[in-house]
Amino acid sequence: MTLGIVGFAVRGGLKAEYVAEARRVESRREGRAPDVYTSIADVARAWRRWPVEPLAVVSTGIMLLLTTPFAGVVAVFVVFLLRGDRRYASIAAVLIVALLVSLAFINR
Figure (cartoon, one colour):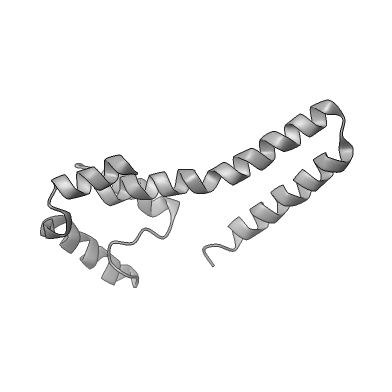
């Protein structure tokens, strides 16, 4: 995230009109706020452009931070299974299902 913020500042921050205007035009066509990434596909599309948009780098950092709780619950689930602790493995499984269900409804 820091790399993205530094890149944003180096490229002129809010003064980088050529990038900002391109995002505004694209956003208006899609009917959403400018300079906002609302899906993983948006971020991936921004990473394919050259130069990479610094705000896409920041968004990637935020997404990685958001995946850590899920990864932690999956890791705990595996540890509980390996130790034979069915009670806590089932609790972790319920949490995993709840996280997946919430993920399914995030872009609706």
